[in-house]
Length: 257
Image 1 (spheres, helix red, strand yellow):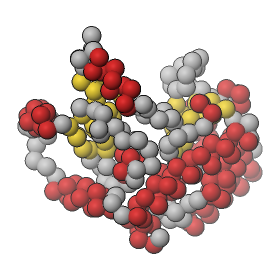
Image 2 (tube, rainbow, N blue to C red; image 1 turned 45 degrees about the vertical axis):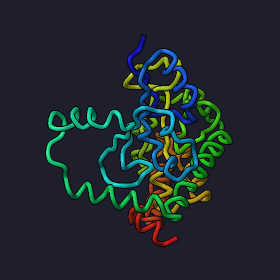
Image 3 (spheres, rainbow, N blue to C red; image 1 turned 180 degrees about the vertical axis):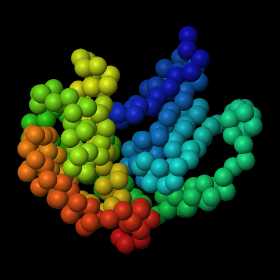
Image 4 (cartoon, helix red, strand yellow; image 1 turned 90 degrees about the horizontal axis):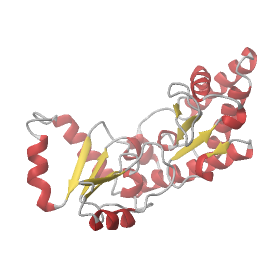
């Protein structure tokens, strides 16, 4: 029997049934831990189900969809708090960084505001827009779509490896990562997929029109990897888009809405 069941993923575009997994954990007398590092902002905005009422422990980061600074949080039931504190300090953590505590306090405050929720809604909308745009161009989307901020793409139908796609897109200023996909026949360093996220784009204030444009530019770069003229054209358009939506930070974007 397992002592603990863990729910969480780094590249899963659908929703996890926390209630069902909690029931399974109770049936085998196991603790239930949820890592919602990728999803915390969407959960805070109440746009997707929260695991907090179902899990014994919940962990998350303060960046990614939360759009804050580096750092993490452990939530737990009251009966576990002393054991968690003892496990963290002093063995894993020394004196807390006061600047990081301030950064956490700020993003937690912002997470209660309507402007934060607006960015999270755009994050969901933008991910769905990218998934649709990719499918319209003949790309295979793992699970057929997305329920969160991630889009996982199977490149086998295009005859391109994840590594090749990652490097080609990086060359034009589009940063994403190669990613293993289900039943991946490629080697771990090469893989057959790539993963997109909409959080950073949404925090910069981009919307549906920009998502359509980004997918168009991605497709141009991937389908013309050896054509220098087209690659330079794509690179220029990516730079133009970045200048139109500069990285002012999530706080600045929310203040302007």
